[in-house]
Image (cartoon, rainbow, N blue to C red):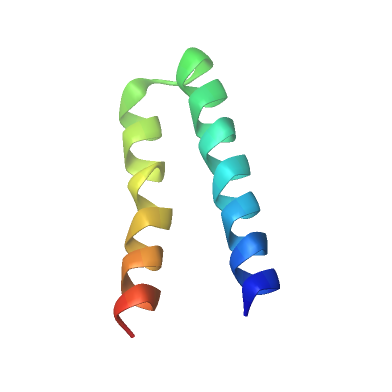
Length: 48
């Protein structure tokens, strides 16, 4: 399942970079709302 993990890691890194870039132009509220979503999904998958 290593390729799957790698893919998820890359996706999360891209999402994080996108959010960080967005924080510069968008209001901080929006960035804070979108940022935690991937973390919640990761926690659910990890426990399952």
